[in-house]
Length: 533
Image (tube, rainbow, N blue to C red; front, side, top):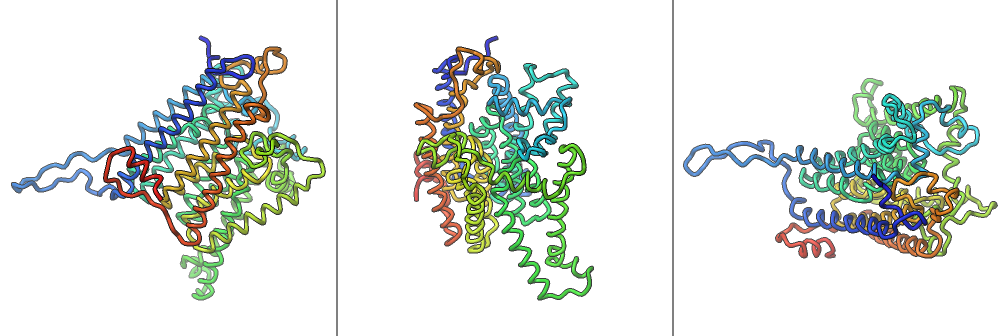
């Protein structure tokens, strides 16, 4: 069987197939979003499921008559999960993945390798964070039981399965969140978007990106931030920090939330003056004053401890570890970006390395101050926890456009946070931003894989310079690739400008643009509803 039907633009490929693949993904993106836009006005204002879903009512003749059986939302969710899983499974075996990331993850599955992060600790450069190493060490152990090696045909399943399961878990989270804050019908719609939307499928099952994991943990962290569940919010944000350095970009949002609420609890305790420690712990505010610092200390200690075995021993210096994993990455960028969707692409700077004297530490500090000031301004103006998920997504979007060192799929956590924020805020403009960003991400990432010849199962030799026929390249920095990069960047920059207007509305005036309740089943009316002011 010839699996090499999808790769192109690289001298070893079918260009028409590559273009068709990207076009179909973009078309399916539009269709899924249109379906959601058509369904949401019909259900977003429906009451939550009644407690007596299958109860009986009195008929006109006084006899008891059974109501029609209630819609089984749980069964439908399982069906959507199964469909989403099968769709991803197909792509696992048709397209091996973006080779640099796929091969790095496949190497982590090698159970016989040396301590994974020891060299990184010595050199000061970290490629994969501890949770990723542990997950893929486990995947490699399971693979070895079945005799699967790096070159086996089924190895892509072991590489991509953790990412696929993260997508399924995110869909289940959104269903649960919508069931709590809206209703089960909306939960199914948003779960369906997560499971069927090409951007999520592309990241986990086509590309093979750990950003699928970070997207899940970020959504979980901010779900519990909205619920004001301190231990869960801190715990899941700790998993973010164990997954990827990009979690550092949304750290100010979590930190401002915790500090503000800690001060609020502390002032309440000072006013109440509980007598004794037991009285302090019985008081809600008093318990928060004691437990919030405890949660932070324990989570920091656990992050450090679970990292130590991967560093080659238990003698690693705490402050050196903190610097290498959580300070240095903020200023470790060496270029304007690697196929990132940023403003620098408009000036042809994609992949261009920075000069050796570039003040990266100053640049990082400046953006840290700007980000923290923005978070303080937005959160303190309304003190609405529901806005924090959208604020975190906005921060990632802003940094993607104006900061350096980003790559193709850094915005996947922002997409997950936008879906969560739509559930919490219900502003239809959030879905418009979601659509714009996903369009830019899918177009850009698809073009990168097509340009590099990665849309297929070609061998690494076929995709290397050793093969004289191979002409592919990963950077979209010339000709048609540059045009696609510029177009995708313009789409994302437009999304940022629109998101800024939404953020101002939410933070300054609490003004939301909601769906109108549907009075018509017409698709044209649904689209008019979606885009109406």
